[in-house]
Length: 84
Length: 179
Image: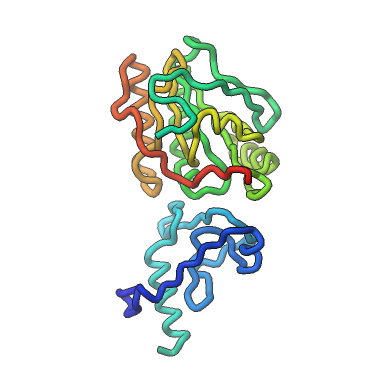
């Protein structure tokens, strides 16, 4: 966040606790990171549910979290969309 | 560290589970195999998926020495359809695993073993005593580590020695218990 000029305190952490909440939120697994409401790595299959997400790092490795470069790019694009 | 399950040096709890083709598997009799690896895993957890190939490589590399490996899925398929029996069978068939994929539908085996995460690795010695418990290696994002903790523990057990370390912290997604 700081690297792209954003305040880390502006991160909103939301816990999705039930299947009903997951469906209502279109939550496809943990962790889901949205910038300006957009999933930073929208999954090909968008089944909602209380599950774990599988991410691919840029070199192809499987990870529990997105590639930091993908997060940074998503933040930059979010800034551009917002016109800041 | 292992609430409800065996401590290092304890005899392994009973295990009798069907695989994805309906064949029932049990642990070998004491003295029948030089070592046995039991791994809790699943279809949807990124940690389990990241370590999966490394664990299968361990199985392949030690099959000639008579070391068996059993993979167990205990997740609640009701809330996690990716871990349904059918999904397990489809994956096992599609990927041609060299080890059986066991279905713990009641979760009773996971509870008796104290399994907590996917993956969660239990290495038994020839007498079916728990010799190593924990993670395959220190980092799921580093394939080059090659499940080194498990490999080192296996090397020690096959030499009749105690692994060092004898346990590490299992890392992964929690087993998805029924509500």
